[in-house]
Each structure stands twice: as C-alpha cells, then as structure tokens.
Length: 594
Image (tube, rainbow, N blue to C red):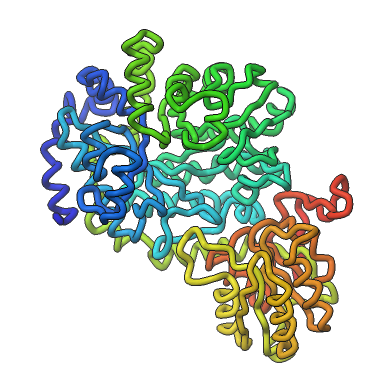
C-alpha cells in the first residue's frame, strides 16, 4: 500500500493538468474548461454521490468485496469509479469507510488517485453525515461535539461557529470536503421521530442564526456545509427513511417557520442544500415529494429564495422518495425538479443508466446536465479540490482530535447542559453527603465510538469527581426483573442517577424511575436524548437534559451534578405536559441554575 506522500506525488501530473489556462485564470475559467472536455457519460457520473463498502479503495476486506458485488456490481471503490465516474462518494461507518482518521485519509487519497487516473479524470467530492450529537459517522479520536439541540440550549453563536470550524478542519484533514450538516429544520413537533435533537430548536430565528454560524465555521475550514432538509422536516411524526411525511403548514406558516433557517443559510453563502423526501401540499399540491418537485426546488428554492448553489438529494433509498415512483424514474425526476447531486441511489447502475437514457431520448437535455455539472465543478474549485485533491500527509496527527479541540468540546458541553427540575434543591450533590452513587438506566448504542455506554461514562466521570459511583445498565426497555435488580442495588447507594432515552407514558423507564424514587433514595434523571422525557418523570427530584450521550456531554452532566460547574443551558424547545399536550410544562427558554 503506497503512502499518502507517494499518492500525492503520483497524482501531481494529473492535478497540474487540471489547471487549465494557468493559476491566474483557474478560479474563473477552470470549471467551464473542464466541462467543455467532458463526455455525456462523464457528466452523468458527476451527478451521482455513491456509497461503497470498504476501508481501502483497492484492497477492502472480503466481506466488503462481497457487499460491493451484491449491491454495485463491482469489487472496490476503484472499480466503482472506473465504471461510473461518480462526482462524489459518501462515507458511512456501517460500510467500514471510517475506522480511524489515518485510514480515512488513506481511503480518500486512494479514491482520488483512482479517479484522477481515469481518462478526463476529476477529483471526487467526498462527503459524510457528521452532524455531531446523535449522528456521527466518524468517531474517536476525532473531536465529537454536542449536537445541534445542545448548541441551541447554549444559545452561543460563537460556539456554533467554533464547532463548524474545528469539525471542518478535522474532516478536511481526512479528505472529506462536504459535510451534510447543519440541520436547518425547526423542530416544533415533540413526536418527530427523525429530527428531534438533530435540530437547534423550535424558535425559527434562533435556528436560523445558529445554522448560519455553523455553516460559516465549515466554510472557514474549507469544507462545504449542507443545510437540510429543504423545505423543512421539523413538524412531522413520520420518518422519511421508512414513510412519506406530510407537512400541513400553510404557505404563510412555512415562510415564517421553515424558511427562515434556509434564508439565513443562503445569505451566509451555504455551499449546498439537501432536499427532504416529504410532501408539503401548500407548496406543491401534485403529491410529489419535495425532492422531485419543480415548484419546490426551482420555483421556491431557486427563484423565490434566490439560491444558485448545489442542491443534493437526501439518500434516494429512503422510503419517502420511493413511494410514488420507481427507482428508475426518481433520479430523472429529481434532475427535472432542479437537483444537482443524486445521493446514494439504491441501484446505482439502474439510476446511472436511467439518466443517460433520459438524455439520449430527449427527456433531459445535455444542457440541463451542464447546469448541474458546472455547479458541482465550481464547488470543487471553491473548496480547492481541483488544485489539491489529496490530503496533507501530516495533517491527521496535527489536526484530528488535538487537545485544544477536545477541550473546546468540553467547554461547549458545559454551556449547554440544562437543569429542568431541582426540588429541595437536591443538586448539587456532594461526596461528603452522598458518597455512594448508583448510575442506572438507558444505554443507547453510540453512533460515534464514545468510550463506553452512557451509564459507565457517567459513573466514571462522577468517580473522578470524588464519588464512588457504580454503573448498572438497565436499557431502554427494562424488564420487571431488571427493575427489581436496580431497586435492590439502590438500597446500597446514597443517591441514584438514572439515564433516560425517549421515555413515554407507558415506558418501563418511567416505572424504573418511580420504583427507584419509592426506595427513599434521592433520584437524579439525566435525559440523554430528548428533553421531553422530563414530562414523564414526575417522581424524580432533579432532572438534567444533555441532548445526546457523547463523552463530553456526559462528563459535563457529572460536573453539574457535583456542582463543579453551574448549569447554564436553556430549553431550545418547549416541553408539553404529559397529561395535557396542549399546555406547556416548561416553556422555551426554561432552565435552572444554582
């Protein structure tokens, strides 16, 4: 396997050849000059952002080769590039693309080398979903920040910009130049199963300001940010991965609520906007999802909002975009609607050939493709990808997970932790009065490679602060036997901390909290995902919201429990009463301190 220095040298001649007309003219003329030499097949390829299995572009593990053959008809990323000439590649952890930073950088360089070695080869725009919080494709030792709703609870524009700038620097060091973040949806529906804490909150103006700042941070780092999911996925109880959401907002409500963050993103120079696979009848009564809607994408996004950057679909394998049309029609209709990048179609060969055939048959013109390809090439030029497609061999060690970045994540987490309930007051706890702590509760599977299950991370952090804390995982659906075991263990503790995740009225997690409280031991709940959990936990004396379960957020919660830092977060969403959802239990902006 050649080193990244060798890869850089091997591609230098090809890279130099891309500098059409010389460096002085590169910014203005290079994308158009590259477009002029492309074949129709080259142009079709540029429109696609493809997935591929494996940690290496040429030597993946056998299981990944088998998966690629089954799903894509090729063995490796290099073979995929040779066959389809994709303009982009998306990384997923489940596809084994993101084992560790050095491997990611090597994979990125391998992909670029494979593409640049093709006739008329162009650099590939590599992307991923690194939202932070509950959606992360790249884990430790990369810096993992609190997610959007946590940042919304902190309310700091500086923090949002810092997150984008640091996260962008680390992504760029690994060869990832496009990030599908920030989420620009305004989460006004507590039952939203797919957005929730991925949103900055329920206040459209606050969300707009934070979206613009985070996008600006990414732009400063030389990475394309992506505002998603246009025209707004925040008021739905249906997940577009598995169903077809319908947004019933009037045009006036949409303008006031959903449009504001996208307007702000556009004003901030957002590089790309992702479509949502959802139906908004007030914007287009045809019944088509927004991804396939000319009135939504061209009429509203392009013409009404004045956006001329890259539009990328959400993943085309999601149910929301496949409900009305077949997989062969979806990519063609998306392009007719105004899309530029076609993300992760379920059958790449079928989709690629469908677009090619649509041009050959006259349904799409080559001039239409030219418009999107030129946008994509201009984005690559703006990111410096056409001039420097390879990673810096020394950047991974120098940039990714550096101590200053990790410390910034910890500081942001401290400013976002929200104290919702504190009867007595119970908090802060002291090792002198409550030396023995039991940490029980939900341990949602980490999407980001944290150091352990939330109960274990929280117990370790409390122990480091002078307590003797024991962890006991009871899960998100504890059985009667598990609850009884936790109650017995609580008898040996001076206080109990219980983590919760997506509690409902009938949830066994509520039963666990009630049974723990009945022991007479003081109980502190830590909602590690939705702050709405607090409405279903009336028996606990104290409740914190962390909005996710990254190490930084859990350690910040431990410091708040111990009183070494004061809680400063404020609810970025209102919490409704469990017994009367029409009434608020805690309003937007609620948050206690010591």
